Image (cartoon, rainbow, N blue to C red; front, side, top):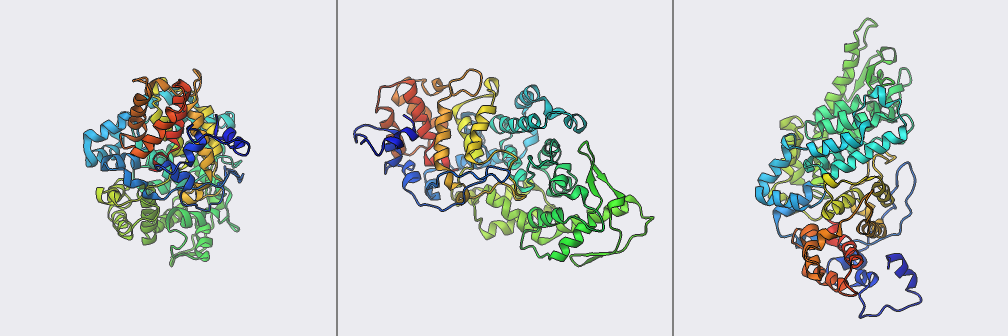
Length: 521
């Protein structure tokens, strides 16, 4: 019986107290699962599903972050924070390497062999290897679909898990809505040449690459900005969202002056950056206290474009950028409200290393910092991928992911479709209205038996084909052996509440993925 069908019967029938059911399971006052139904309510604005479309999903309740108290092993806490979800392979590797060894393993991402997922993407999604000149001749909808599919495959199967977490972070930081008409195929190039190339490199290189990305220039109307009436969108967002932060010490006059400095930064039809001399404002400008003298009409292209390079370097060197980027990274990796001491230390690392992202991660993810950090709530993409990783799909048996991906979109986070330049929120308050859709997605995943699309192989959980054996596998694969006793008892009660069958096992899997300990990380 589905969650919805049980709700429909609530007004007309009484469920026996002796008969475990999905509805009674979620209403139980035992274990962390119950906190999802009876915990602290958080008011939340319904998430948008991209393109300004609202997702009017039922308001839900979520528990507090004290769920982290059930996670005893510091190494497993690190795996939860630095990956898209636990898997037996990842847990084994982390336990072998220890905390510091595993963190260094993930930080040294380029040394990790990822050929299996690379081959999977290359074989199934050929558009990802096309040049801009070729991509612009393809069906734009299929281009978008293949980029989203590739992102899912890499999140699911890549051994470079911390790298994929940072790709997700920078994708939101430098958000581009792929559905904006003039962005089109260029988001594929942005993903490859900006986000993925620099996700674990240097923030300075990342920012400059984004500033010359056709996707970003088109999205924020910079590609058509010209004197004497420059468009201010990109000038505003590079300061407010990409570097200084909203309280970073700049004025509206600085926005206007930077927009003049950046006139001429544009792109061509193939998605390549171009400098358009005729668009540039050569008059004198003053930006954040620095004067840019008027240029003669005979000035070189390099000198004219160089004004923008200089202004961006000013943003990179500003102490507000060090603090803003550090605070945002610490919020992503550690806690929604990071300790001031962590932000200070990370900002100092940013300044000392001139924006080395890996060094900043090292500063944030010390064992002491992580041990003191509360749990965070998985966003829909993170939740879906972590569930699939726990359920055991591998690159060798990889399904056609598209149906599962599209079904996930109903939770409110379709990839690359956030319609504001600030990216999908990383906030429990924002996502707490999606509890029912999260449960429904867990039910969807556990019930998939197709041989042509996504399939959950329940036999992985039935190695010892009885209730106790199933519980052992659920504990190992979903919780790395840290499932609380109360949750185990509740799941076991449900599993034994009807005749043992594959359907009952799958329903129990669905409930386990809906558990609070699985919803938080």
